Length: 225
Image 1 (cartoon, rainbow, N blue to C red):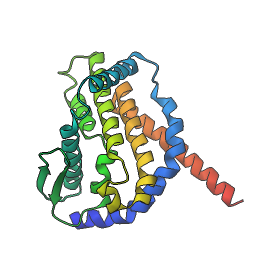
Image 2: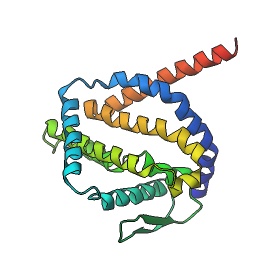
Image 3: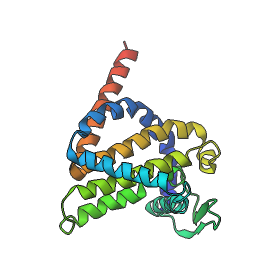
């Protein structure tokens, strides 16, 4: 099964990268659908500012270990998601990095996933969904989402640089095509969830799809004139 996933993802690698590029205008325009002018968003923003304030007060390297752990766990999550057997996860004691190993060839999604996928936020969103009856309603949940959103964005900014070994593995042209759209897509999904749960995420994705389809149709019409 893992070999089939690796093969299919190998075929989809460049089409997905170009899809992200084509979708960028739609992703930006669809931000208008997120409805940020409400108390949920301001609570979310408050959580994000709290993270930044604590980051300034604390040591600049205070959460390096957590970032490395999140990085390796994201690799692991996508390895398991594509049916690879994970054999080890290792974190360097000097906080210089880590590594994880799995059986099989692997694929670009496993390699590039920590640079766009908000693993902690994803499981938090699932937890909020499945345990909504036991979680008291209030803006505290929005604040917690904002706190970890800021953590995710900072982690991405720290990890994306020219010496990143994973970028060498998948290729820099692919990274520069894929990552901007993928990060905007994921961050916007979190903002949509903060405002109205998974239903609002679905509405946002549908808006992106309609706008992207319109842009593609206009481009095709222009080049076929």
